[in-house]
Image (cartoon, rainbow, N blue to C red; front, side, top):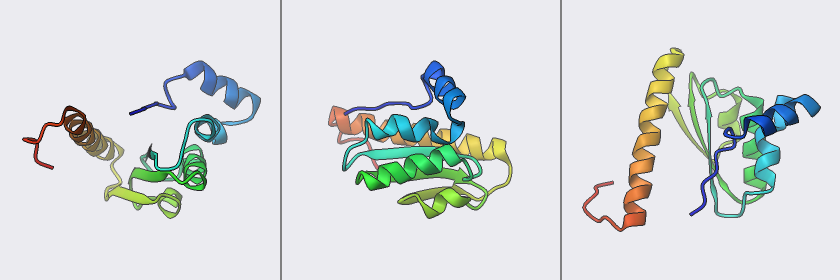
Length: 122
């Protein structure tokens, strides 16, 4: 299994944004990595982040499954994501706390699948 965080390489993100803008910082990285059947997870508290929306468009064109974690009403990203998990709140700290819990649950499930742990209940 491959897993890549597109936000980890700060020098790349700032160089890309400096030469163009922040709108494509995730999408252009993803373009070279994403393959059909991949799962691309994007977090946007408001659902209005152009860089996440553009990354989802690239993922969708590649045949990947785009999954949005958002708050509020999901914003524009909900129109592009294949699956949307919306925290129905306008409190960003609450939204981020729930996203953290959801990411932890996903991590535990993936780890259990890798280990072949049948005792973990999904």
